[in-house]
Length: 484
Ligand code: NAP
Image (cartoon, rainbow, N blue to C red; front, side, top):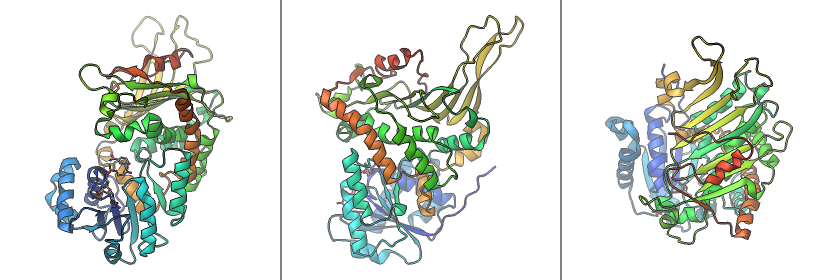
């Protein structure tokens, strides 16, 4: 079965920072795949904008290389690539200067959707927003897309929101969290709200705890300078893990629509309890002889920045009272593995004599690898000898269950950019959500700074510091295995 692709309306998309890493690695190859799929119509255009002195042909050559490197198997489609590259233009522009803006204004067409992707440092957002208006390039219907990091604390996020609000309505601002664009994350919504089966159990009466793990095998590598000022809490928890937690924990919205979904997510963030220091474990990867330590990669021998964090959160509302949400994320761990696991409670009483084992239903939503969902159920071990019980997954790996359709699904960036053009903000963060998330993380980070908290060292290729195991062990629970 081949998936149905509905073309979006014609657009002019300006990518500020169009020569940068994100544009070459993700945005342009993604748009190319949407072009090949027929979702981006041939009368749409993409205009790269950066300070580099290039002409349209020079920019097309640069993007051709980017697509060859990062575009996947489709990059060999020569005709398609030539047609796509013909949709590209370039303007040499300085966000903080005056050069190039008149030229950009002249390029914009009336009557098509205008979108502006701010793929530049956040310090430039204000200058870009101001100049887009000064030169009459943005119209009341234009959309702007902004990337993480959205601030580094509540004050800076507020200031950014304020800067953007001077020129754009909230309905025009698309704050990307690419985790929300992942197929499996949307499937989480489909499973929760498209089946009668789960919702009645989705509360403290039946759920023992929830685990969210986002494990990476890579270290900070070339991003050490940026990462060392950020750390896992700011780089991963405040945005990606928090968004996953919201989707798991929110009340059913009345409609799968931006306002309703984001209202419910916001309520979850606001209901998060403050966390006690002993419910957080920070880690930093050491050198195991093979590779450099975090401090070496970050080029900061006295760095106290965490490359790993595990924490136990609680949500103060009727649905989730007393249910721990264990979150963990880190670099240089055993495997690249992201998963949300809903661990249900033990049976109130077992009728099977002699079966001492604890059998638990676990719903696991795998983000990577092997995207899919499985439900651990208890069944009878085959063969004679009475009723011995074993646990097995009811496995739905999307690649197997959906075949070609799963392979053709747009990746997170592709889907989100098309949503921008469609004017659908459901999978983007609203300004108040981002601020609420910082309001929760700020006191935690301030506590570390006050105490000069030193992260625990861990060996690369492991599950992080042993203390993170204790976080669950002391409550009679254990983390699920990190496996690739
Ligand atoms: P990058 O590789 O450093 O690219 C920055 C881009 O901005 C370049 O095209 C640069 O071109 C342009 N630029 C810099 N100063 C400018 C100015 N004054 N006026 C106009 N253009 C200017 O950065 P990136 O990795 O692509 O990241 C872009 C944004 O996305 C950042 O906010 C980053 O935090 C965020 N982000 C990136 C990733 C990723 O995987 N790379 C992931 C998530 C979020 P010129 O120097 O020629 O002007």
